Image (cartoon, rainbow, N blue to C red; front, side):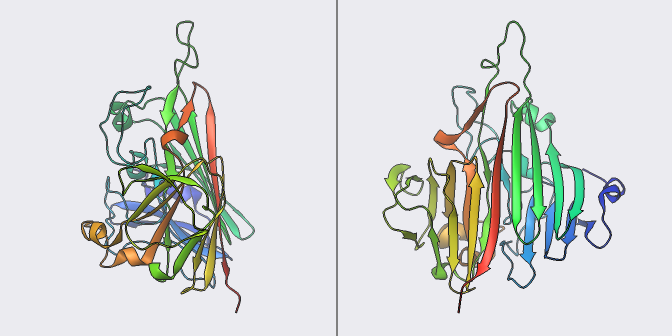
Length: 315
């Protein structure tokens, strides 16, 4: 875990400071256009709020802020598998925590710069004993957070595996899944619709992983929803009539979009979910998962980029 003395070297007076919350360190950001917070565990953004707006991200009131414990809300980084680990042609293993290890690891701050109304923070995660024990000792993750009037994120994964005269680049390939598991705050889930996914195929994880196609132009949730939409790079918009705003999620080099809400029964089983918390968020996740998983040969890199913006509805 980073020490606050080391982090002092990245502080920018009046804009960026580092504080301790329990046993975790976080970056606290105040710019001319927004406020925000990022925990070093998981490089986990828990707060981003442009001035004059309601909070954009949901964070459960019962979230645990403990080493090794995932934070419920914000933008967890999912890596190197999505959901439960399943065997594939690159690995026969199925052990490890749900959604991988990146969201509960201590990331290193590698840079901090202020440019106009925007703060740019960079983080890095490298292999460690835990990842190596799970079979992942050949990667690096670099994460750039540009926080201002918009929130721009770039997650770069590199296969750092070595080749030799006996092992070629393809033989040293590794399968990675990744997602920015964004919890968007909403006034009430009944007030929300999602556009941008019409005529797109998805896997319905609430119905035996059946492959379906969304026929309706607007998606409105009325029960537990867990849908990885496949082969889509489309921009998705979350329309909230209660907050009178539109959140736009633009993405690049991401072919999976996941829409998730646990609804009442499943949420009630989550120790870190506040009462009726399911009514206060919708997850729209930019990902590369399942049949859109990445396969990187030794030395190859891939960058997933997301831009989140918000605008008030007219009237």
